[in-house]
Image 1 (tube, rainbow, N blue to C red):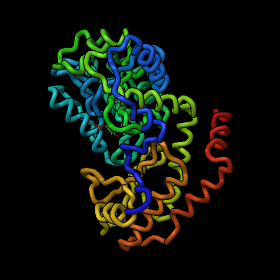
Image 2 (image 1 turned 135 degrees about the vertical axis):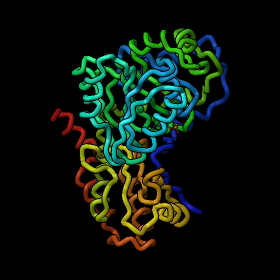
Image 3 (image 1 turned 90 degrees about the horizontal axis):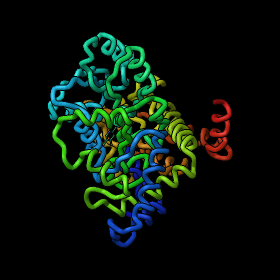
Image 4 (image 1 turned 90 degrees about the vertical axis):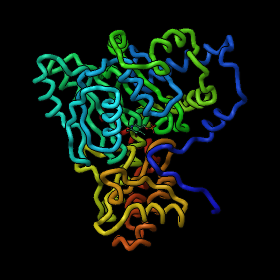
Length: 402
Ligand SMILES: *Cc1c(COP(=O)(O)O)cnc(C)c1O
């Protein structure tokens, strides 16, 4: 087809040209004497993205799933108890990974469309007088349902119970796009991946690890080799890696971090909220509902939208892809066929996002979904027009209000 295809899946996200060009460089010597001049400042700046001063960052050649595995194998012992809530495909998969590693997962099943149930977490932690729970898992942003959970609230529950468990956060679809505070929330391991907020191809798992988690790694007994923090610590301190790093991806990551810090993290968060708000107004104007049950769960990086009964979202995705060249996100697992998703994270602006809204709207009309032509697009358009200088107006207002 002619023209540009639209990529609105919630990862991989659109890669800015400067990042693509940074990746497209000749192969280089990963043991060059001046490599640390590049890697050490990169590690330091990555910590800023996690809002951490005291933690340590590790970059593995892997996708986010590898980051999950690194987090648990480096800190836990087979049979350790882990507290986790399941409310979508990603929270489910992390639990599955824990179980396959022989951990005893205390699973709290929650309706898909809600997030971490703070009251239940608080009860479980308080009643765990023997301190058998060694780690608490939080999927910060459940990408399958477009639900964001309250990590600070989980930290409060831990503190109120005076519970020493480690706090592990899956921030793959939140970090670098939704507010995340490693140190303020005393997160012990945050897992991220290159292909979402970092606006890169898939291929890097980026972890931020607290001193407490590094201490815990000394008693860890789960099998690990490639993902061992110890080998990373030994070589990273001089700016090198225990194996051949993907230098091209690291060059891209440098550019991505530069972009994030130049825009300002708080501005990045406001922009995501602003773009998401327009999408939510469009959904409302279509007369449809989000999978997320209440505003407190609404995700600023992905909207999962429920189709009316009798319509198949897989057909909608095919229509959007083949007829209009627009990729939307599928409904996964329990919500397959019922939900479609619009990813609104990474390198995006209003007009790019109008492509997703128009593509979804035209495809829904083609399928006979009873929505009014132009309704969603018009609602988003009027909202975006209201910020005359773009989101920077909102950003100034919001930062002033804080
Ligand atoms: C994308 C994603 C992952 C990681 O998936 P990979 O395909 O392994 O990168 C993990 N958790 C969440 C919430 C995600 O959105």
